[in-house]
Amino acid sequence: DAKTTQPPSMDCAEGRAANLPCNHSTISGNEYVYWYRQIHSQGPQYIIHGLKNNETNEMASLIITEDRKSSTLILPHATLRDTAVYYCIVRVNSSYDKVIFGPGTSLSVIP
Amino acid sequence: DADVTQTPRNRITKTGKRIMLECSQTKGHDRMYWYRQDPGLGLRLIYYSFDVKDINKGEISDGYSVSRQAQAKFSLSLESAIPNQTALYFCATAGTGSHEQYFGPGTRLTVT
Image (cartoon, rainbow over the protein chains, first blue to last red):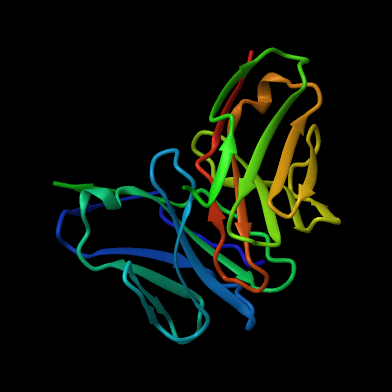
């Protein structure tokens, strides 16, 4: 599985968009980009995933660059409850689909 | 009721003791996983199972063993607990081919 690089921490004002970057320059053609988040000591929660195209769901949007070497998770209107550690993961969704988590980005939403 | 449950939620034990952490799920998923998390670090995979007869080691399986008693149950054992196994332990499940893993609430284990 390709490695990812994320900033260790970020701040965002409440109500503003939070843009969380992720670099995955060694991504392979069959690897997906996944985002999970973990609110303090709770179990991680799946947010969104994508392969090539940008994706949007009720929680967030995922923007993947054309060369697929980086992506951005967008929380359109951050709330205090979005304060969490956000993990960007790149992997093949195959039978051997264990998820490898890195240290992630700690997002603080500020009132 | 929660889809993925873990028991106990908190446990303090002494060095050398045997301890079992249990995970149950009601999602009907074939795949189950055990992770540990240490302060400031991401999750690391201990063991995973793709069905009742399939058990695989993860990144950090030394000092741990697992048992998949049924599709819905996956237990993690520490045969002889040591202090550096103090951590937060998470169980997760996934359906075959699914993109999403569902995590339990975690077990906080302290080995003194």
